[in-house]
Length: 411
Image (cartoon, rainbow, N blue to C red):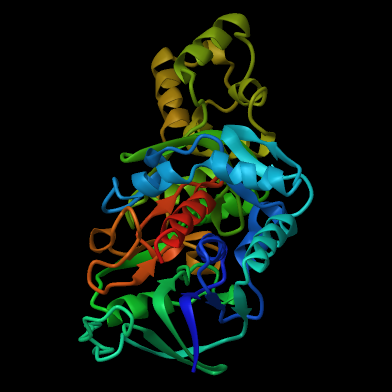
């Protein structure tokens, strides 16, 4: 059996950050990664350019049943700390909308940076390594997670894998969630949590496109590929960003963001005049261009295909009528329709395309300062496996860096 100070299960963003942080403290660290390569989500992020953090990170950008939990870790390892690391390695980057930071060249630069930092402090990484069983510290009960030994020197986790047996004083679970199973995602981290007596809040797909099975599906198919800026909302949240019509429904930044807040089966509202009054706009057009048709006027700001779909739904009776001859009451109703176009998704595309997994290990059973389990000493949970989920735009990577760094200081 080979011994280490720290074993990290999972070689993604949080696991690599935790490994390099612990290694810098002189800890002997082993990363066990089940798939054929580490950092797969890093490589695919941001269209291959890795949206590695966001300049505008706030705790309000994260969802959790315990919303204050993320504050400590985020406050102790900030976007500026990670930016400093990126700059230290000479990686060129740029800022896009809403504070999003991307590599100029390739996401491979971020992964190479993390690997280099790990290599510098002697972190050992095994890929295609399947963990078959985890035994609690000596004298403990693997199923209950209770350790009988009171001697910290003897308290070691033992892991049986298809590449040998390993032991360590600290065990870190950085396995991620269920999103994008083709990249090797699984519920293994949740299984480990349950083994040691932890509550796992029900996981579901997050940052994921909506699907439809009613008449709107045909509309979205006809408009597939069209992006339009909207304010997309449910009562709990509203996002002003582009939506993208697809063959299955709605995607784009606004739809992905809203999916994190969407109650299953609830309608969503599309505002095609975000930040404006459609009623005032129509009144001005009626005065300035009285002989124009509504589809001509709306065609000034929306694409022809979308306008024709809206016409068939909302003003087919007035399709060939000049705006001057349309009663004000009808225009008021149309304005309401354009700013509160209500559609009802049948569901989402699920984990297949979800960027994150909502839910996970209940944070009320973890230390917000160290990410250590309150149920099993020296057991830590970091990254996506924990019930902390960020918005689209680099927030989930920042949680990975911050939570990995927090645990890495104490393992």
